Amino acid sequence: MPITFHPRAGLILQCDFSNGFKEPEMIKKRPVIVLTPPMKGRNDLTTVVCLSSVEPSNIMPYHYLLPKASMPMTGHFQKGETWVKGDMIYSVGHHRLEAIRTGKDYDGKRQYFNRVLGRDQMAEIYKCVLHGLNLGHLELHI
Image 1: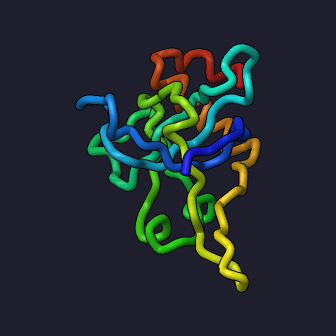
Image 2: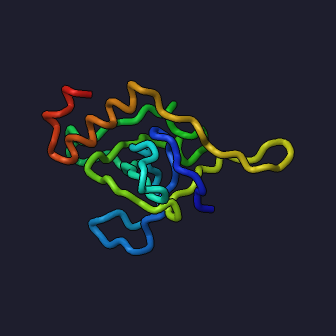
Image 3: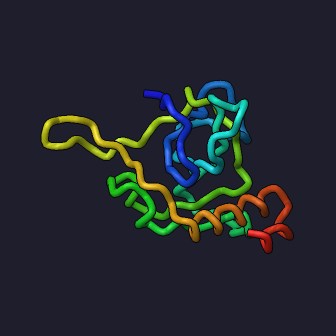
């Protein structure tokens, strides 16, 4: 179910890239990290960076290994590593974004992952994104 709010920067969500995108763009559902807070005039858009469970064949400055403890504690996200792909940045409509389900509580109500990454981790991710934009020289200002 799509989100109905602007998510906080640092929140990990699921994004559906399957409709309207073509390779080499992302073309399936995958986890993403929200990069930006709400912006005036962009009520239904959020800028995200993609995550991948596949280690890059050549690790570049725009890749970042996310600590496993930062990911939802569900089997799918805890099986292997999670890499930030700082060169895969998108501004997407909220209709593409979903909260990550983590299970149900004792009353059968769905529970969702809602922990936001900390300042230090986000600084590393922003540096990664700058390198993905070929603006790595600006990382000194983060």
